[in-house]
Length: 333
Image (tube, rainbow, N blue to C red; front, side, top):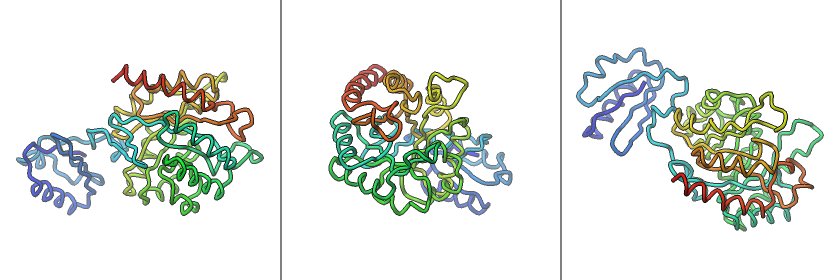
């Protein structure tokens, strides 16, 4: 349930109303816009008398929210949320490009790519130290050593780090990480999401391989219900009956998620198709659809990459793409 307050309501009146709601055992979420204040109520709202609430002089209107995701719902928070990580803002008109290799392989590789993507315009650096792979015989990442190399790249380039967590026991290793990524396979690892909800880190949640938008938003709700509202959603392609591409990139997810939620939405065109030559087209389409950012895989030697080389751009290709993305952004602004 949400209660929209009338303009001119004082802070004292608002706080008294919130205290009344709390005496009913309800959690209260306040969204302060430029012209409107929205009070979101979470819990058993059946005990709230809507007629009584609407009769109050400070209440403009009251609405029940039927969707199960409350904190992530745009009805709770009419203005788009702007999230800051490593000095970079995401959402609400702020567009960021996250780039880097699928896996951290060695020091020379990670520093070379970090320098290259920064020069080309990337504002955050991605790289996997822990890699969930379909085959147990594939490269699984460098783990702790990989985290050290990511920190080294951050120190040298100043780029914030985005990397994936698989096990909450590894959280102490993520001290220097700016955005913790929850991969597609862990999108519904609810115990992991609950623990991340207790952190103060930005959490980037990738859509599951066969998950609906509602399920993605419910995963965000798990994090937000724990107290951490710094969540970014990521469309990275879903599995369909199509076999020519690794996944099917659902570009329509961007405007729909923006309609449903106030959270920033970025797109990963690399996993979206799994084919490097298709990444530029999908990245431009995502930018045109209103995405708040892109996550693109870049490798200095894709042919010899230890994971996902087939979908990785070279630094030169990435540099060319960022110029085209800038033109698209100018065209739609």
